[in-house]
Length: 581
Ligand SMILES: *[C@@H]1O[C@H](CO)[C@@H](O)[C@H](O)[C@H]1NC(C)=O
Ligand SMILES: *[C@@H]1O[C@H](CO)[C@@H](O)[C@H](O)[C@H]1NC(C)=O
Ligand SMILES: *[C@@H]1O[C@H](CO)[C@@H](O)[C@H](O)[C@H]1NC(C)=O
Ligand SMILES: *[C@@H]1O[C@H](CO)[C@@H](O)[C@H](O)[C@H]1NC(C)=O
Ligand SMILES: *[C@@H]1O[C@H](CO)[C@@H](O)[C@H](O)[C@H]1NC(C)=O
Image 1 (tube, helix red, strand yellow):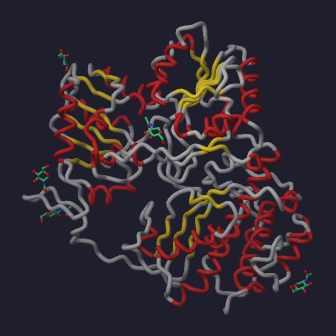
Image 2: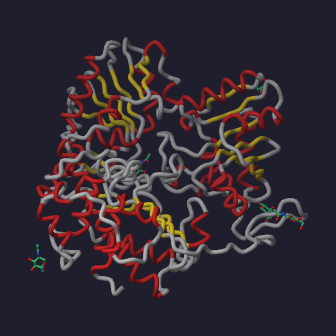
Image 3: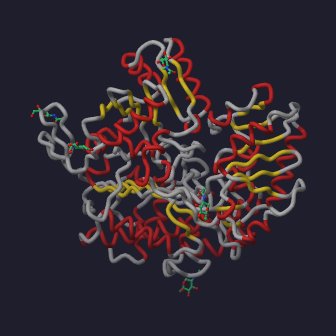
């Protein structure tokens, strides 16, 4: 969970015990920079950006710019961005996921939120000022003081949403400074051979077993929405990476933790144009896309870099292009004449994708079952091993990954696992490393925030499918599973722990919440639960499966949660089955 949401995660476990750790005083710090002494003090973690800034300023000079803004996203407004796109990280040295950098001829500044202040002081050298604020206003206020009337402020329009472009543009214009769209990225020009290579792993089609409908059916559905729309759009332009991945049932690995690939789609009433690197498709995949032909159900693969020119050429005709403004870059928006634009917050693909058909729902539940199993196994493992003093933040995160890896169709974490013990639990977005980690102890808090990506297993779903309770849905399977549908998983159980602290009483001491699990689950699963001799791995009697299914029934929403006590009882039963305690 990098940027947007930092609450509400699939597995947010706070194991609270009776005591809190007491932080040591941090008066004398050698881990952060000190720019107010001469010479400045720089920790070993700081990056020397002098040469990088000099080179960038040369490019700015060539473009006659007084300032250049380097934001933290990619051309698809992705929440997670590939290393290839981490321009702000490279120019500043600061690796946090959120932060905007602005370089003028004389100064360089970074704006970031409180999660990252310490990290920024550790990683930036004294070329950079740190501003502990976020948003357009403080950046513009600073710029107005630094650059003269008439000055030009350059940006790469592909890295700005329509909204953020407009808020900078209006604010600067009010004070006679000009925002200038420069389609060549100036950081890329100076990044040179240090820049990570463009991802080029194969782009592949999902197995049919994992898809809810064929791409041809999805295309037909979107075209029918275009025809029915009163404004009669002739095309839909897809900019978000999950839109194109969903539409064609294609996947890639360009973005960490997300199975997407760099792409755009221009779906018109008579053609389908997919902008991506064609050499990354196998001949089978090209065949799957009918890419040899030119009819309305043939996908023409065009080069990724051609998208702006192609959209511009298309909009010279008598057309209307439907876009989702929340994630379309200004770089594409600016080439579409306004009278030829149908602008909604979300494209019809994004909206359609959010509604799951019954097969997708079934697949989705199966994914959650798998993840529930892994997380419950981890909790049990923690209960056994933490008291031995053998678990640290890093080995714990690895163990969870291992349990997830033992589930069918696990395809990686859905974000970097936050596994934080004691004081570290107070650091936002703290992730341990092999070198730097803290021990877990049973008298300190442990914070775990993690998620997994799965393709669902199509067989054995009949058992789970009996539970008709609706789930608040995530994106597509094999897309983000980092979506934390409240109540759809053992999350409720985990919350029971958060609310009650780590209890030390046996399950029979807990009050009966008065909810009959049998009304919510199949007898097979209920028996799996009540029968304390059921093993974890028993096929189809997997307690994780049962737990999950039960919770779908008893935790309809996160807020009003009548089943907490019940969940706690279950957790005890599960946890203590194999536990020596
Ligand atoms: C920097 O050093 C000065 C002088 O030693 C000290 O007063 C100040 O607190 C230091 N600042 C930081 C951020 O450590
Ligand atoms: C940073 O690098 C520049 C050359 O690129 C060098 O002149 C300067 O001394 C370095 N600064 C520090 C603090 O090492
Ligand atoms: C450069 O920009 C300034 C405004 O900052 C403008 O007055 C000047 O004419 C520009 N020079 C060129 C060569 O475009
Ligand atoms: C396209 O993909 C091929 C094969 O993966 C790779 O060699 C090439 O560099 C890529 N081209 C671009 C422009 O990314
Ligand atoms: C409980 O488990 C035991 C051992 O696996 C089994 O013999 C028994 O039939 C189970 N009882 C129920 C109600 O499933």
